[in-house]
Length: 140
Image 1 (cartoon, rainbow, N blue to C red):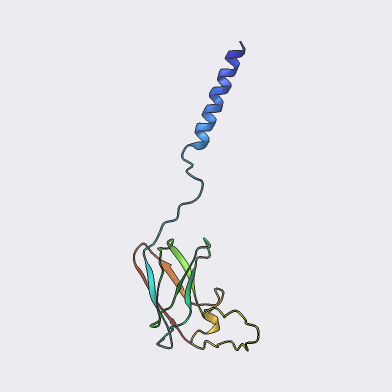
Image 2: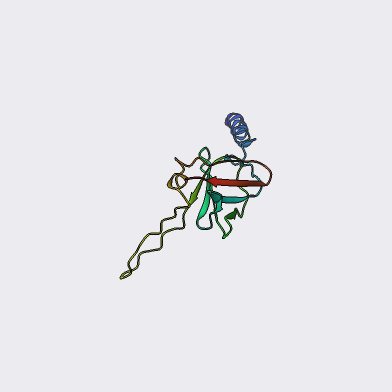
C-alpha cells in the first residue's frame, strides 16, 4: 500500500520539474545585437581629436566607449545591443598627480560641458541592426 502512495508523489514531482524547466531558457533576457557603430565628432565644424565618445542606454544600462582619433573619427570594437542611447563626448582622463610637479588642468574648449554629462547632452543615437554611422556635431 505504501508503494502506491509513493508512486503518485514521484510522478507529480517529476511533472513539476519538467514543467518548471520547460521553455524557461536561462532566465536572462537575450539582447539583440546591432551592427557596427562608428562616426565623427565635430565642434563648430572642426574635428574633435582628443577624448572619447560614450553611448549609454538608460533602459538597459548598456555602455560602450570609443576613443577619438586625430581626425575626430571613432569606431566601437564590438556591436552593441539595439535601442536608444544617450551620447556624451568626454575629454581625456586627467593624469595622476605627481609629487613635486605642479598641475594645471587642461581646458578642452572644443568639448562644451553640456556634452560631457548624460543628463545634459542633447546627443542621441538609435542603434539599429545595420551599420550605424553617427555624425555628432557639437556647438557652443
